[in-house]
Length: 285
Image (cartoon, rainbow, N blue to C red; front, side):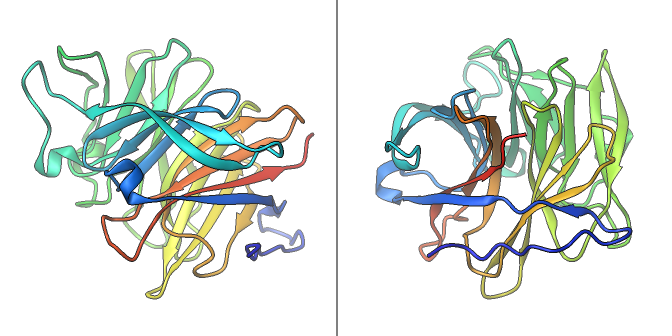
């Protein structure tokens, strides 16, 4: 079934609309991975290799199998294991709610957490490098903290909470740069959508994945902004139940010059939900 993508004309004062083209979906059966709860996804520049994060403090490296049209047809696991607090310390409880993933140009992996809001770099078995926690992180809503993480070409990190604290309050985007946190910009909170993922594309723009749960299923939306929060665009917005609970987003450019949006769903460890990879494309610019 081809998803319903809601298109709209450009209206005065509203974000511009540039509907993305649906390319396909692939459901990864639970017996093939034995994990679930996937909350973040980063692909390589070719959209082939990937790193994925579970919200139970586990990380998975793998590769997509694709057909001649570039559609995902399978997944190969290359490596999988837990996040650690040190040589012998495994994460558990509220501190293990890993939600956002970003990989910088050096290959260093950064993770944001939702339970206790914090950002850290993975440094191997000796334990992580934990960034300082500003006062704003300590004031975030329980279980609604740093849901998404992205890294710019200059190495600056951008993180955003799931909720802004009030329905009429914009989402703050916090930036780690030159050894300090600041609020880089804000993005407007529109309708009932909440943040689930983010990435900075090869075009240098900020992509935001959001979802809305309406009781019988999920709606998904992707917006795009300049890296100062301006030039808001709605790239796709789906109807209820078109996809599962999309939480991870990776943005890359394919051989045809199109921006690709590769997303993964969090099955919440429930038998009636799935791990689903979904891809859309934007026209080459």
